Image (cartoon, rainbow, N blue to C red; front, side):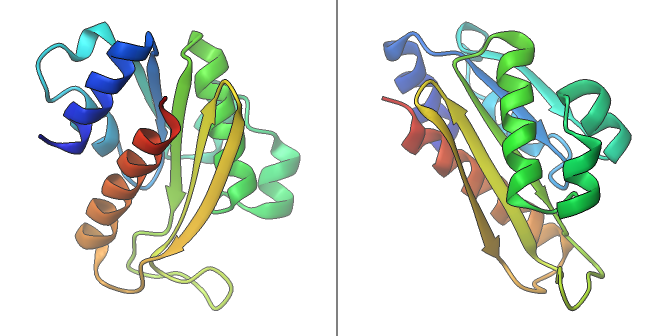
Length: 155
């Protein structure tokens, strides 16, 4: 059973609903969530907010947070997850923002991805350094990690 199928099964049993907010993964998490049959019983929507303007307009991410912490930060990931959850009334939302590459900087290197999950009990966030493994590999690893975090957040 795929991670997404396990999430859907667990969410269905708990009466949970799910939303996603993605930047560097460009909708890969939402695509994974809607792959298994029956996803519509649990999955509400996915936001792809690649630009800062989209993060602000669609998810309510603060300009101040973006200016202070930058788009690739746990602070922004938290605001993305919270905005996705509250924006549609889902019980759970997962957010992903990072630098898939190529590129990056000394302070925010290629392969750094920040994640957050908003759930009824609060918001958890973490950063993973996947390294300069290539754009496609970073995006795939980030999608897998987001799904694992979401699964762990469900009852």
